[in-house]
Every structure is written in structure tokens, then in C-alpha cells.
Length: 336
Ligand code: HPA
Ligand code: ZN
Image (tube, rainbow, N blue to C red; front, side, top):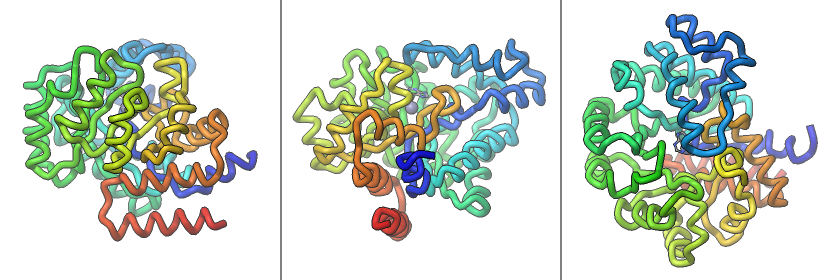
């Protein structure tokens, strides 16, 4: 292992942008397909990997959603989250807030309860036996109608204690944040934290970022790097300490560019940017690989790598005492 990889390996890390359904590795996909008698059209890991070819958000989503058919029972959701949390723990991720997409499962006839209970049990077990703590953020699938989002939120409310926040993901084109203003207002009333994807290089990127920040009043932006195009919005996020959960390797897949220089520029301007994995089974990098590749591409110093993790623990939706403990652990590592 080179020096940079070794430094990143030991760094106490916080992952704030990972889709649990995006952690479905080919091996587990095949095992679940067999367990549930689902024909996915491929029989070997190589055949599955060969389908993981995309050059845009929509071509990625066209592979990503059908793969979810292999997830049927509460145990399947447990096994998926457990496998991710084992990898996260092995990379010294100390805390994770993970997204999931309940509407896609509910539309296939899987009850909300099976999804959330499976994921939640995996998070609880990992806290106890892997040393990685976590929480769940339910995402609204933005290319489905607003009524579907409202129904999903209603289905989730009886399990509110198992969910930390509400996010927004999937295909941004033609699906602006304000489409979901009512659902997000309701979630806020119910005490959920709010975040939204503002994907990289989308049509109307800046207007969508503006809506998310000013109309919906999200606490974080997922991706959100196009904010650099509008100095007023850069000031807005910097002054309010709003975090951006960037995903360098994912950016390379969907836009051909990691956006490393933009992420580094925002970091150096004092915006709370972070580096995360997004859909690691599809994009081939967990959080450590994202940090290493970003650091190489943008020539980040060690103290800038530490700052990325400091940002992440600071913008995480953690109680103050736990946040302080993670930050102390980070500072102790940074001090060598
Ligand atoms: N953007 C939008 N939808 C998604 C993503 C993403 O990065 N990952 C999984 N669903
Ligand atoms: Zn994402």
C-alpha cells in the first residue's frame, strides 16, 4: 500500500452519500436471485459485471432499478446492508447515513416495513459487532409522481423512529425540487432532516440548487458541485455551513469527469464538501478509493483529506456528544 492509501485507510471516516441498493455487488445479486428464484438474465459474476456499463445518470438508472428485483424479503435487505457495513467497517468508516429507495420496492409489492426493518436491523447489528454506527435516509424517487412520494412518506411515518431524514434521488431531468415541496414540508413537520440530490451537470442545475436551498430549505445537497457556477449560491452554502456530499468516482461514470478540481476549489473556499461513494458496487469504489482518487487528481494535502472528514462529521445529523467524540478521534489521528 502506498503512503496516501495507508493514510486514507487509517483516517476515521464518515459516509453521507451511499445508496444501499447501489452496494449490491454481483456476487450477492446472483445469490439473492437464486434464493428468490428471480431470473436476472445472467449466471456468472462476469456476465453481471458486463451489464455495468453506463455513461450518464439515465443509463446507470436503467441498470440499477431492474437489479432491485432480487430484493424480496426482510432478510434480503438485511443481507445487502450487512455486506455494505462490513466493507465500510473494513475501511474504518466510523459512521454512515445511508439512502434507500422504498418506492421502487413498494411498487414491486414489497411492504415498506420489510425494507426498513431489514436495513435497520443490519445497522443496529453493525453498531454492536462491527464498530460502525449508522442511520437511514429514505429517498423519494423524483421521476415518479408527487402523489407516489406522498404515499411513500405516509407509509414511512409509522416507522419514523427508524428514519433520520428524507432525500430525493433518481432522474433529475424535468423533476425539479419544487415538484416535491409539499412532501418535504410534511417531512420537516414530522421532524425529519432534509436533503436532496442536485446531480452533476443536469439541465437547470443552478435553478434546481437554488430551489433546494431557498424553497425547500434543505440542510445538505447531494452532489451539488455545480453551485460553483453561481457565486451568490456559493456564498449561501458557505455562510450557512451547508454540506455537499460529493462522489468523485460516480461523477466520472456519469459525466466523464471526477470534478476533482471543482471539489478541491470548494473545499479551499471553505465550503463543507465531503467525498463519498454513491453506488460503490456499480462504480467500483468505496469511500477510501474515492478519497484516494480525489486526492491524487486534485493534489490534496493530508490536512485537506482530514478537512473532508471533519466536514463530514460536522454536517452529519448526529447528536452533539457523539459528533464531538468522532471529531476528537479524527483530530487525534491527524495529530499523528
Ligand atoms: N443520483 C440520482 N439517483 C441515484 C443516484 C445518484 O447519484 N444513485 C442512485 N440513485
Ligand atoms: Zn446518489
